[in-house]
Image (tube, rainbow, N blue to C red; front, side, top):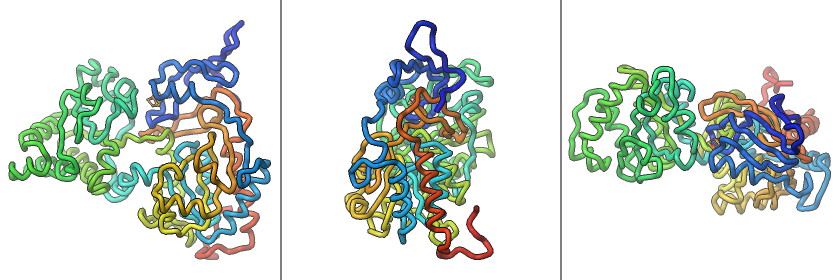
Length: 458
Ligand code: SF4
């Protein structure tokens, strides 16, 4: 891969400068990083936060073979052949991961899933899956981070802790920047943090509202009722939400008075009691408030390109994750087709895992079943999942060694500017090889449920 045209090598120095490099460590996808590269080592990452600096500076080319078959070094071609044989021969294949790779690779992954009739799932199912379900049900009133930076005068964080999870969120997008309609920057914005505990983000907020643990659903519906002017029982509100009615009434007054209100939400909302019902309430609240003023909502997404995974799976199947393609058309059913559930029930008989480590974080029944079936894993580094894989590929790291496109948490596509080449192939190249071979193997075998009038795309 070549680096961007903005790459410069200072005269007389061995260190190469890559301007406007992109950090893919978190969903902020900061694209203003200046990398200093000495051979295959990044020695400085200007403007990156502590997490981003660690991501860049600790990057090393894995001293491993590009491919292993059952733990033995093999050529990439041998690995592709074995991987295609496993996937094409499976009755119930599973595909999982996808959040830490490029959009280009994600497209190929979904295509493979389509050819083999797999369940295709991403890491969204274990983080913002409930949001994906809520978006399908309620829709989303939203805006780009650029619009929020230029207009947002009331910023609410709900169940999110950007000070620790997205360290440049405040300074780059949501609180500090001076914008077109908020020329005073931080002085022109009011920030509220709603959470069950006082996190580091509370220090930056003007107001912290501590709600009763697992009381998000009740708190959001209290706000929805207040938005409609419905009178509520003060004692019940305080008992259900942990805060007096007056606190919620004040917040609602502030929300209605805002010129451009924003709610950012995190896994503190989506992974607590109520899950997708919480997110639906939040999305509906933002929609309700548009009767009075402009109000938008955005999820604070974690992995660098998890938004890309949602987008690509949705373009190609109509649903963001947990999609089954075995009948030749997509079916969406989280809990049935999501990877951890498919594995825990012992249903999959083969798997393709891309840039994810389920053996480190899935439930024990899911991990045990994955170890029992043949599976293919690809990752830039050695992980428990690559170590136990039938076919394991060591691939180049996206963003650092591989060009391509990723989606920021607000669904804005960002072009990567890699720092240096890797001796390992990109997952894109390996996946294309697998797709090509799977198609050859499947050429004369009609897949179940494929209607002759609607053949699969060429
Ligand atoms: S905020 Fe996120 S994307 Fe930006 S530099 Fe830090 S880790 Fe990287």
